Image 1 (cartoon, rainbow, N blue to C red):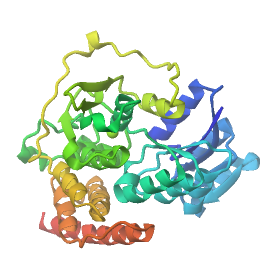
Image 2 (image 1 turned 90 degrees about the horizontal axis):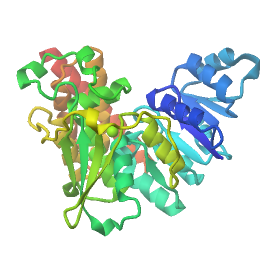
Image 3 (image 1 turned 45 degrees about the vertical axis):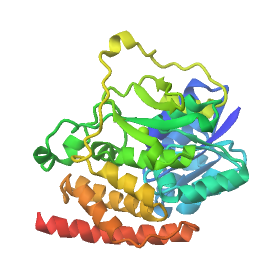
Image 4 (image 1 turned 45 degrees about the horizontal axis):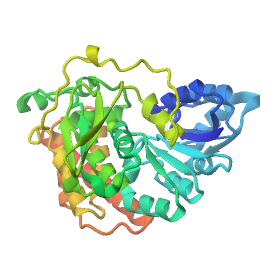
Length: 388
Ligand code: MG
């Protein structure tokens, strides 16, 4: 029996993780849960899975959860301490980190320090602090298993393989809802259109990131940290059907791919079962019904976020922190209807252009640069908003 902690249990990945638990009651048990703001859903999850420790993002949220749980409330902790309490709860074996955005970095570091296996769905953690997180995991001998479908696919392709055999990682991208829109039409798209993702159902922030290709850019940085390969060894190919989840090209030119249905329960279950494989109650992949599988180069001119991410990775240090923070601010402004779609990369470019790069040696540096980048991006977004 493996005991799970789920950070972000009320979100899309968190709910899929609980569905994996439902499918394997003899193998997986929920020991701790944390959520951002949805006290009503978390209270339902508490009643169903009986975790010993539960976290909410704020003290006020923790109060709402206590009220919703009534007499049978478990230990409830609010604020950043709540995430850490859930991530380090002693019986927990695997911490599934699916909290949105940059929340959860401290909790992941605390989980590693406590010797937990980390199943990572939150790519921002590695984008911001990949050096700190991977170094801590190496020191503690802790595994970081990717839940992000592309990296999970690459993990499967690399299983049992010598790292020196890798020539190149090939991340597939759906291309998002606008992959065929001309540049002038891209300027006019709104949040509703951007939130209609063609193949994956996900949270709002990551769905916008998919539409701008920033999601793929963040995944390039994530792949660098997870698999120890350079930016030059990571390529992106647009594959609108999202059936090939990613590929690895080996030194002799052979390409290994992982294919599957587009359902996050598959990579989540792999991370929970690894190094074993378990049965899954998912529909089988029927390639005879999948239709044509297409692959083409990303339109880097129409979707400049991808190259901004490559630039941040090649420069390294704190530049990916700035990229990530500025992107969060720009995406928020876009979702609020204050910023145009094509202004998102302009905000990010302003922030990374204004930054003096430092090495990431402490969490304090990450926090300080993250805060600076958010201010810088807010100013840039406001300037673009006014000129619009
Ligand atoms: Mg992904």
